[in-house]
Amino acid sequence: MALFTFLVEDNRTIRDNLIPALDDLVGARVVGFAESEADAIAWLASHAGEWQLLIVDLFLKQGSGLGVLRACRLREPLQRAVVLSNYISADIRARCLALGADAVFDKSKELDAFFDYCNEASRREP
Image (cartoon, rainbow, N blue to C red; front, side, top):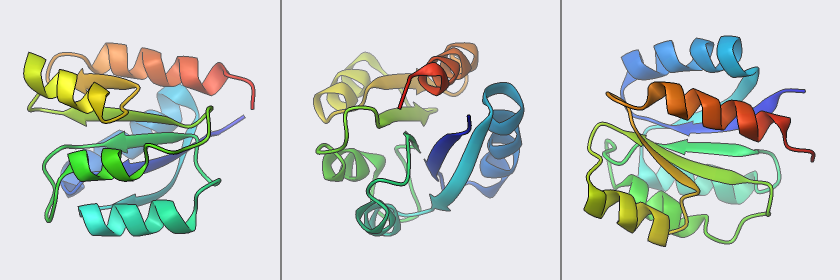
């Protein structure tokens, strides 16, 4: 069964590479994406029950992934929000988790762990 995924990433090259990788390695179906905090929040509000995995970058064209995390704190128990960013430090990781992220991954060092997490999420029963 597909893992319905919403991606918040403003870098087109990263999106163009991540979307097929999620499909191939996880069986994820990306149901939409946003490049800004406001667009992500609007999509999540209007599609509340239509996603299982939210992938958020921290630095966006407008706004921040932290605002997206804050906006989706009240989500269904099986909906997971993860941060995938190049700007992960111990402080940022702690802040993301405090805002409700289920996991935080560094794009440059933790892609294997990120895909492992996504595979685990795809095996959860709805």
